[in-house]
Each structure stands twice: as C-alpha cells, then as structure tokens.
Length: 134
Image 1 (tube, rainbow, N blue to C red):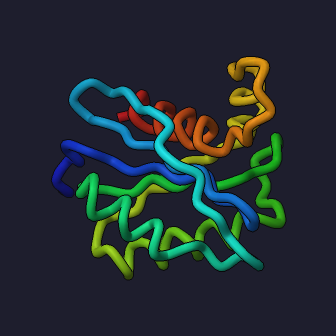
Image 2: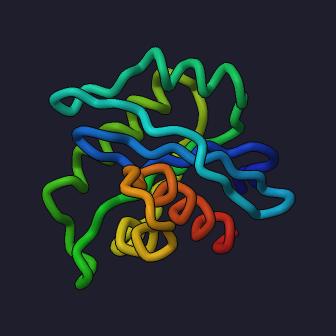
C-alpha cells in the first residue's frame, strides 16, 4: 500500500504556450491559482517551475490530462503525460494524473470581466477535483 499524499501539492494545467499552476493543501482540500508559466514550442520555462518547487516544496504533483468528452485521448494527452514524467524526473515527487475535460471552460465561467489568461484557474479546478477525489 502506498503512503497517502499529505501537505502541499502542486497542480498543472499543461498547454503548449502556457501552463497553469495551482497550489493545494491536502489538509484543507483547497487550491489556489499560483502562476502561469510560459512555454515556447512545448518547452516549459523550467527555471520558473523550479522556483515554484523551491518556494512551495510540494509533496506531490498533479497534472491534468486533456481528454475528449467521450474519454478518448486527444492531441494534448500524450504531451501532458510526458510533461508529468519530466516533472517527476526533475523534482523526484510522485505524479498523479486526473482527466480534465472542462477545466478551461469552467475557469472561463468563474472569471471576472478581465481578459487575463485563465490557465492558473484551470489548474486550480484540476487540483480541487483531485483533492475532492482523495
């Protein structure tokens, strides 16, 4: 049996241009939007991600897997999975994947009248869904 995850968890909404990041807490089962990391040609700003790991010292990583509504994989599913594997390799933390079909749409619905990207809010929704499932 694996040890349950406790403490701070970092969640990612993977994208080829922007990666949303949220920070969650297993005790309160809450998450907050934290950052939007730039990504060029699918290559994340690893320095920015490293700073987030150093600041928050998460015990685990959650990555949203973009899926079609029927549950089938789509174009970004494999790149998101690969991103999770890279995170695990770089930061030596367990990675958990959660299917996310509508997090970006839900983030758009939650947002106020600003035109800011919502990737960090999508990451918050992904992380909240994972925490709720614990």
